[in-house]
Image 1 (spheres, rainbow, N blue to C red):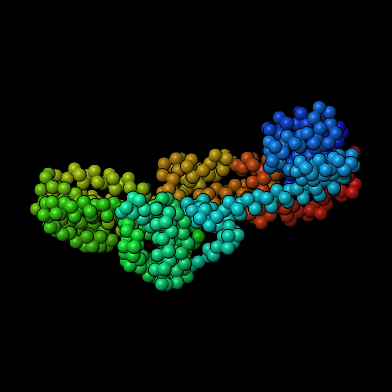
Image 2 (image 1 turned 90 degrees about the vertical axis):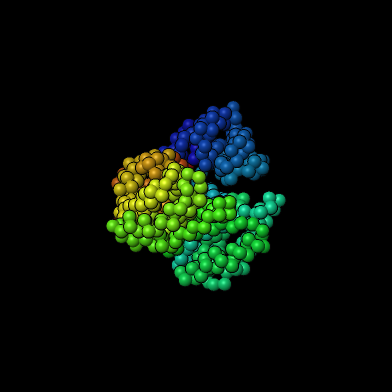
Length: 529
């Protein structure tokens, strides 16, 4: 808040007679008239402006008129010694929030300020409830951008039942055969078929991610019910979608999660699964074309290979690969692409299984592209067997390392956050750059290992430091906000209350023996004239 009054004594009395930070306000400064106040208002952007009416150069009503036009979000309190109806009438016309008559006591002024502050909070909450839609909430959950408490609060305002024992994310990618089909209509029709095809106790929440994609959040009290619906989705529901909508359907399916924050992990897994599924379908189409052109008829027992990947003995690797790859000896690797499609298909299925069994240490698409380049360089059956041995080794190494591998990364993240929490620019992007892991993968492993998103952990660290400063120092609330990485004290206060249940002022006073003595007897405070 700031004050504009041509009488220096009034400005000083107001500034010095109220413990602003203890009352939950930041006094950013004052000015002697409207003309000098304007550049300061531009610089400070106060939430509340208190101004006298009668001042030289530019009076309070003129100032209010300019501020209302340029910065309508600022709340204006007119303070005047002139009890004239015309002034009040003009103030109301200008949209002034409050009109006070001098002399006004500290108690009266604080009462008005609290009332205005409450209005600001209510307007922000209303704005938040209006801007938060069901689709945005689901997208934020999938993106790991919202904490558990805020998610449930938003869901309650939206009358959206969010609580469940199990959550699973499915990404449905619809590609019409006819480009003239309306994509928005297709996605709406897709949801209708998905809901109608659900015959078990599973609730579907969804939002549109792109022109061709709809994201489903499956929630249920039964893990078995989700498994049954996923089976229906892969089978009859998918066939219904393809036949009725005349389109191809790609599904990406994530793992079951029992916590709300696990939705983010399931979403990342579903996105990876969708990518591998699309590559697999493209590869199979090419394989069919090659089979017709070259009249090749070689069958590989993929399930046998995948089972060996899961439970096979590394000591038996070479003998297993020799036997498994024996049918490929008849391929002319220099003149036929058939072997490439077979190995590519096997590689994609291996990665799909690996993503389900254990955590991969980087984005799958980059690894797959690298392996595809190796496959393209195969010129003999011996190269083929060496590749298959190498593929097994890579996936086994990641399996062995997955259980404890990420402890060092998590420690690096926590150390970095503990050192940089006071920097407002700290984000998932800057943290991922520091630990040299892609943002999406870091987000996934951090959530898996800690049960929190990085945003939640950063907020927890900042609020923890703020609580410490409130208890051990006399720093003002806005100073503490700056010290823990919040350049907006009002935003800091809102986050603090959401996290702790108390305002910073209430938390500081909590448990203090001098709590009652700290409140000033307003009746004894001076009158502003």
